[in-house]
Amino acid sequence: MFYWVVKAILAPFLHLVFRPWTEGTEHVPRQGPAILAGNHLSFADHFFGALPLPRKVISLGKAEYFTGRGIKGMLSRAFFTGVGTVPIDRSGGKASEAALRTGLRILREGHVLGIYPEGTRSPDGRLYKGKTGVARLALESRVPVIPWAMISTFEMMPPGRKFPKLGIRPGVKYGKPLDFSRYYGMEEDRLVLRAVTDEIMYALMELSGQEYVDKYAASAKVELARAAKTSPPS
Image (cartoon, rainbow, N blue to C red; front, top):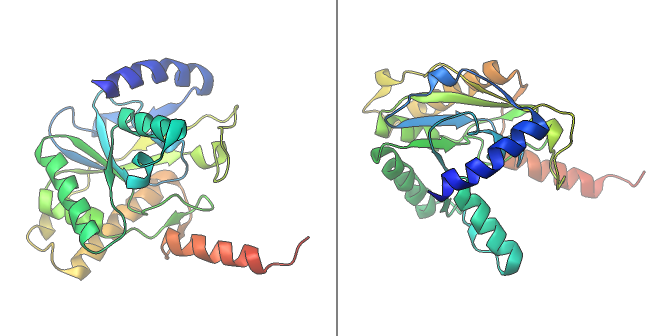
């Protein structure tokens, strides 16, 4: 209920101020479970990614969004709850398995699950290597996987910017569902998981028009931070 209240409040404002556009909503099923696998360019993706859809999209988000204290922590919890985010522990190991089980439970309940295979926001607007959790979800749940491309949200609200820029129209593209039935029953095969994930990322690259980088976004962020520390002051 809270999701629809938040959407009813935010949607008219976002449409009036930012005039977002969309393509391909017909590819998202009107009922039944599905996975939306998207690129992650900006914090603004949380606002615009599910905006055009008449269905609730539940996404998995880091637990830190829900554990803050004070007014800021309360507002963060309220916002992410309102946009359909379920908290997960992203520390790896058993936590990753628990996150997978949470995703499968959401799909078994017939919901649309939104997931960002890159695992974190792009540091520079390019598309980075996907993590294979999305492939395990797809093969174990056997539900449609719809590529979900955010457009121009990086330019609108790049890393470090607290408020979106005006004058930039964000877009969302939904691609045709991807069929991985040929891999059903092979979710324990690492090569299969990588192949499925790479196919999803290729579809996202085609849909978004982004340059693809064959490394993880988290590693790229570490490299950029290290370079910033070692570079001489201008």
